[in-house]
Length: 136
Image 1 (cartoon, rainbow, N blue to C red):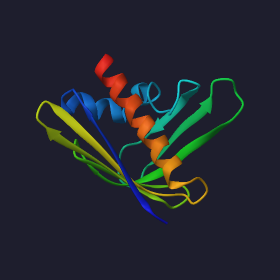
Image 2: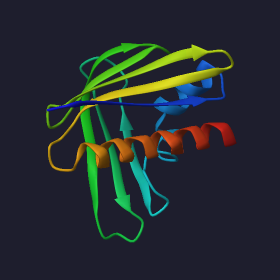
Image 3: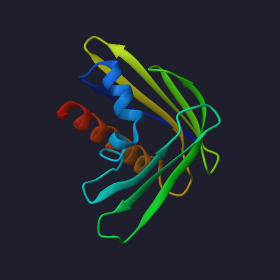
Image 4: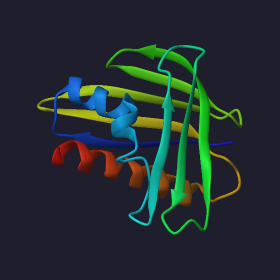
């Protein structure tokens, strides 16, 4: 299993970035890789040992999946660490960089899709997050 890192810089303050990353009403507006997909259902209990479940599916109904896991560590406005339902680990760091917030995600690969496909997918979701935050 490999670890992959992706990141994006968002032109917004940390309060807005943190809120948009963690609040279900915002997650459903950015948590998908392409415009053909959506995130219609979000449950997010942002506390250690609590669970999250984000439904990601194609808008045409042809496919979908639940992205689920359990939070390990939360350091407000700095770090979110969780384990996905398949056991893979993810760390998300939020770092102030001038007038931007850098969001860095490091995740374990899943072994089904190529590392490059996984990197591209996670990077595309980060791109959607940036676009959503900066347009609101």
